[in-house]
Length: 128
Image (cartoon, rainbow, N blue to C red; front, side, top):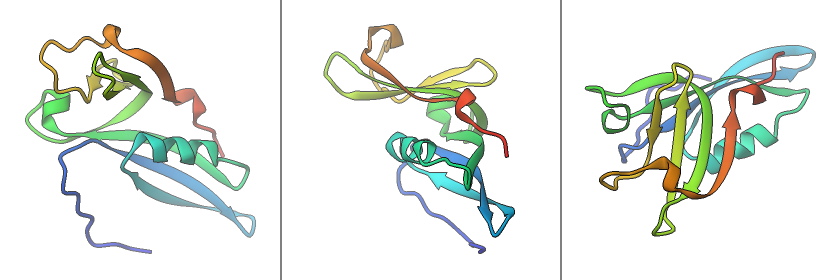
């Protein structure tokens, strides 16, 4: 299965998920391009002896990662929470320790979020 191009209209982050799928006693590798925390959580929950996640990275636009362009980095943690307006905010922690968020509020503080719930921890990745 090969593809030539994927398009994305919004400049929002997404997840690059590497999985190994066991078929007829052999593992093959595939990459999933996941566009939401909800879908990432579904994939994590669906892991079993036949389907194993081996790597999760996040791809972030410049306004999130503070650089001049898009970046793909190893992911340590994803947490969802709600700001004072009850808007959903995603917190991303990268393996290097950098932290990003999806809020566009000036002066945003992650410690002011309510209803925090972890979606992903790097310890959820299984080995084949």
